[in-house]
Length: 286
Image 1 (cartoon, one colour):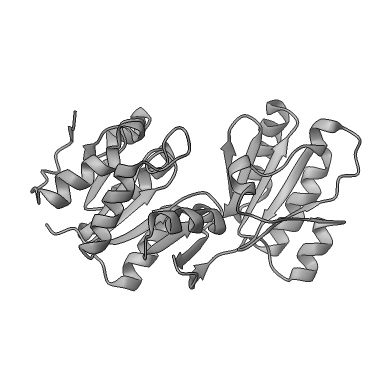
Image 2: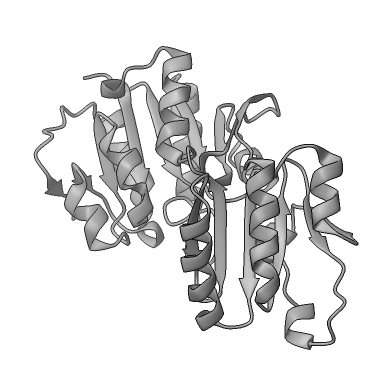
């Protein structure tokens, strides 16, 4: 089988535990580009954050950002986006009024949050993740509700940070029960991330493959988290990072080294440089 398309999760696979790209990773991406292999960077991160990483890697390929809600070429051309339904955003913001939390609405090129009126210092300090703040302008408005109405559409992603993990759990149960049009997931101990219910990394990748005329058998996916299982299983070769959790490894065709051991570079070397015929029976690379 000739593999012509590589989709790799940015976090846990490309970025090391120190949030940096290794020299080996940069060289491997450059090698694939020169050999004509298409590359898609897949991430839960906002578009601008993903684009900066693609630029650092000098990739002329594709971005699947916002957990699959946004697909583009790395050179800024948007191909597809799926926003959260406006009515669902309104309903969720009303439900969140009973919690001590801060909500960010994540659009293509900026995030929006409300001006803080409470005196609670913890709430006042709630912002985007430190990494995303570097690339993602944050606008403060008087009312998120009015902003969405004026905008005429919902955001690609909503991120909510809570004062406590207890409130986060309560809100997760409530939002999941009341809103069938969205998919809610945990982000750490005190955050939730929300996208439209028909959005996922795997669905976005399948859409992109169909657009490009690439069969699943020609696709390699590299995942690092349990949520990457669906994306990994659709590929001709599904690779799990050595640092991935057991549920992902159990579903993988191949387990490479960890991100801090340059597992992506090692896989690229074995598959593309040596032109190995990969036996799809699961085996590990040590």
